[in-house]
Figure 1 (cartoon, helix red, strand yellow):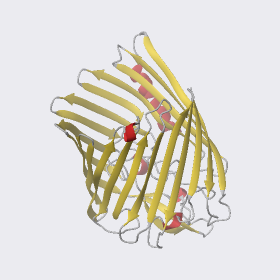
Figure 2 (cartoon, one colour):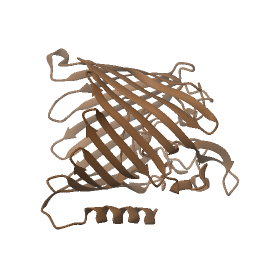
Figure 3 (cartoon, rainbow, N blue to C red):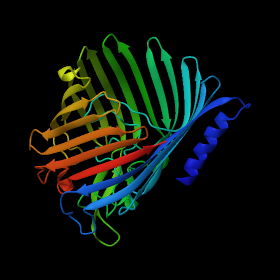
Figure 4 (cartoon, one colour):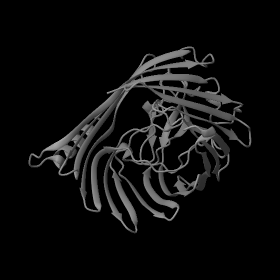
Length: 399
């Protein structure tokens, strides 16, 4: 990977090279200690009941040529007390961008998000998931790419070439939350003979029609979510081995805004190995503004998640309902609370989450999160997390 990052650094710096010009420089970042408290005894004796770690991220941005050219570098690092797999460094961004009228060119490492729904982001496909940061799969690793975008009256088109694949990060033997059977990334397998060097392609068209925001996406390449295959470690212990298949995916994401109502939908068709299937998720969000004659707002969210394959080991959400509320105080401290639960309609297994955030003074932000798993049967993919309920507290110092 060192040669890969160095190569992208050389490309980005070469693109940015040119006559010296006055520009604008921005430097921001944060340092964030974290405490995790697990409510149950772990399934493996080496896993702790409490864990501490320290994370930090800096972002250096340089703009010149009246803002038409820019370079951004955003490294991230976490040091974990117990889990050496969670101790990691990543470039969330390391990119050069050039804008020429209605066209934009980018090269380097970047994060690209597709999707509109709250509980599950089905169509978000370009970046790999950073599982050691968030069990809900919302944190992403930086993706090496070259992209070309055009912004026209008839819509926006984004084209991506993705020349290097990044494997998903999983907790180590001492990490939590984690599967009961460890995941052995040293035995990772690929359908493509080019493995990490397989070149992937993606494209997206997006436009707004009255109250509708519509996007259509296409991806062809190495699937970001691995199939976990039972195997044995070098010492003969049971492990799960990641297998990355080649996929073709067509997707759409649609959102309509009508007054206080939001209507959302994400759907995809995917070809993977010898299987072809559909997945979809959609729902509504209604916001009560000025709750009880205060500045605060309350959003009520309801979504349904469906998988044509039904219950399967690769996807825990096949016939599930999500219900939640989002409260925003709209105060000087940016206080907010998001809480909700995903319920399996077949087994009544429940995944509950709550997230509270509040700024303390000018430079600090407190975040408190809770994750609870209840009623998972042995057939549920989240069954191995049944003893990993946890409370997580972070206090970030921004600069």
